[in-house]
Image (tube, rainbow over all chains, first blue to last red; front, side, top):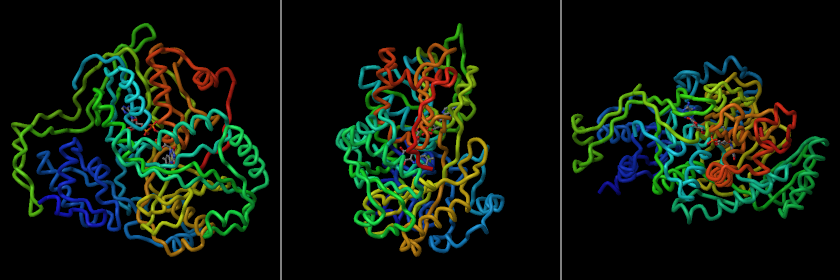
Length: 111
Length: 419
Ligand SMILES: Cc1cc2nc3c(=O)[nH]c(=O)nc-3n(C[C@H](O)[C@H](O)[C@H](O)COP(=O)(O)OP(=O)(O)OC[C@H]3O[C@@H](n4cnc5c(N)ncnc54)[C@H](O)[C@@H]3O)c2cc1C
C-alpha cells in the first residue's frame, strides 16, 4: 500500500521509498531529502516537507527541530528577469535577500 | 561506535574520504572509521555540478581524469546504483586572445595524451549547440568523452559499498583535536554534533499516509546524546576534509596554504533534453549542463566572496549567472530558476592539490586542495590514496603534490580551472 502513496508529487517519491530510506539509516531530514530527492522539484518542498517530516518523526521518535535549509528563490524566477537585475543587486543587499530566502545562518553561515 | 582502535581514521565522509575507504576495504583493510561532522553530502560533494572531464592543461590531470571517466562508465554496474552518468562532452569557450592561445596549447597536449579534443571556430560551436550565440567567442574546444553525473548517488554508492565491506561511517561526529606523542597522532578526539535516536529493532507498527503511527517507545531506543565525547586510537589519520582541511591541520600545528572559497550554483525547472555537453566559459567562469532530470544546472565565478567557510546563497550570484547565461543562450531567458545553493571550493595557491604525508606529523596523510574539480578526481584518487596508505610508498605524483612544494618553491600549474 505504501508503494502507492505519493509523499512528494513533484519528484514521485512514495511513502515506501521514504520508509526504506529511514530503515537504511537516514535518520535526519537533510539526509532523508538527499537520499529520496523529496522537495527538490517544482514546489521545492512546500507540499511534501511536512508529510516526510511526520513519517520521520514517527520513526525516530522525535520531531526534526529544524526544517531543511530552504533554497532561494522562494518562487521560481525567469532567468531573463534575473539578468535584468544588473547592478541593482549589490553585495550588501544580498545578505538580507539571503535571509529572506530563509537562511538561518547557523554558526559561520554553514547550511 | 563509541571508542576503540582502527587501522585508519578518515576525516570527512565526502566523495574523497568514501572512495578511499572503499578502496582500502577492497584491499583488505576494513578496519577503517570514516567520521563526518555533518550528514552525507553536506560538504562540497553534495553541492557540486557533477562535471567530469579530461580537458585539463597538465598531463597528470588529463591522465588521471581519463581513468575517472572510465570508472564513471562502469560505476553503476559495479556499485548497483544509478549515478545518471551522461557523456555529452565538455564545450569550452574563450573570449580573449590570450585565453584562446592557452586553450590551443591544452588541446594539443590532450590529443597527445589520446583524447579526441578538437578546436572549434566560433561558428562551429553551433554545430554542437545550435542555441548558443557565438558573438564574442574567440575559440572553443570540445571533447566528446567528458560528461556529467548526479553527485548524490555517487556518494551513497561509495558509502554503501564501503559499509558492506566492513568500514564504519560515523556521521554527526566531529573531530575536535588529536592526542599526539613524539610527532605522531595516537588518538582522534571526537564529539557528537547531533542528538541521535536509534530506533529499536522491531518496527512492526507502520506509519500510514493518514497520519503518523504510534511514536517509538523512547525507553527502547538507544540514544547517543549530542555533545558526547570520546577518543579513538589509530595507526594512520587521513584528512579528506575538503575546504575544512586547514582547521584540521591546525590541530597539530600545521598551517596549510588552502583557502575556502564560496562557489554558488543553481538549477532550473526541468526541460526536454536539448543540451548535449557541459558548456564552460573560461573567461568569466560560467558553466551549465543539462542533468538527466532535465534541469539546467550551472554556476559562475562571483567576486568578492565572504571570508572563510560560507555556504549561503546570494542574489548577486543569480543576477551575474543569469546575465552571462542569457547572453550565451538567449532562449534561456524565459526558463525559471527553481533553486540555488552554495558550497566551498578548496583553493591552493598553484591550483594543484595537497596530497600525502606532512612533515611534522608522521602518521597524518592529507588529501585536499582539489579546487573546483575534486569530485571527478575522487574515483581515481581513492585508488591511489588507498595504495599509498596501505603500502606507505610515495609515487612520483604524490611527491610532486606534497605540501613541501610551497616551502621549497616548486609550484605547479593548471590553467583549465572553471570559476
Ligand atoms: C558549487 C560547486 C560546484 C562544483 N562543481 C564541480 C564539478 O562540476 N566537478 C567536480 O569534479 N568538482 C566540482 N566541485 C568541487 C567538488 O565538489 C569538491 O572538490 C569535492 O566534492 C571535494 O570532496 P571532498 O570529499 O574532498 O570534500 P567534501 O565533500 O567537502 O567533504 C569534506 C567533509 O569533511 C567534513 N568535515 C569538515 N571538518 C570536519 C571535522 N572537524 N570533523 C569531521 N568532519 C569534518 C565536512 O562535513 C565534509 O562533509 C564543485 C564544488 C562546488 C562547491
